[in-house]
Image 1: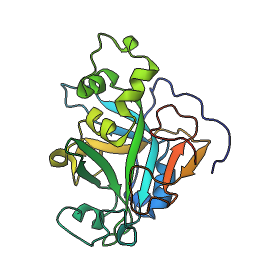
Image 2: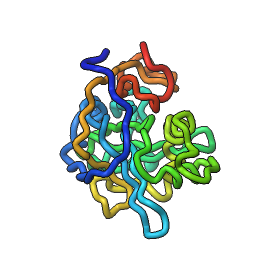
Image 3: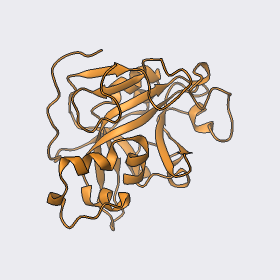
Image 4: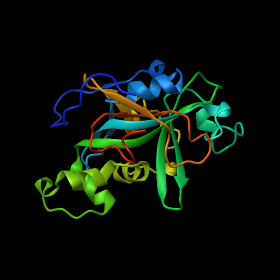
Length: 225
């Protein structure tokens, strides 16, 4: 499914970013997922590392206790507690023994829902992202698009590029810049959205809950279906 015209490549980012309010996230994961496309994930610098920003270009919705693929499907546990709390908080989990995956909680408090971040397009802080991913560069110009794609295309890669860990970020308020990791809007408008079944899972894999910006080179996995 898609609407509109192909998306142009993203360029330099020099505009202000406004944090998204909690009300943005306190809705169905389907709506939140679609409207997160084009927004910006920000890691605030601490004076020693640069601020990282990247455009959200691919996400998946998870529907809580009604969704067999959701971590909330068994009901509330100590592991998934963030998903049942207020909307707009980071839910981080560890997968395959070496990757942290970032999600944002949705729905009203007490009702689980989440959106998984699957791919980002780097905007600023590319050198720091490359170092975090173990990609050696001497200058940002050394990174061609094929290298940039490796930085943040896929949930594990983007988590590593942004230094996401469960200890550091699980439960982080993604509506507050003071939290260090947050989501904002910069006025960018997405013109084409594609919707496909989710990927990389076995349960409820047929549900069309994966959303991505059409023709964006940073999208992970298959681009059609």
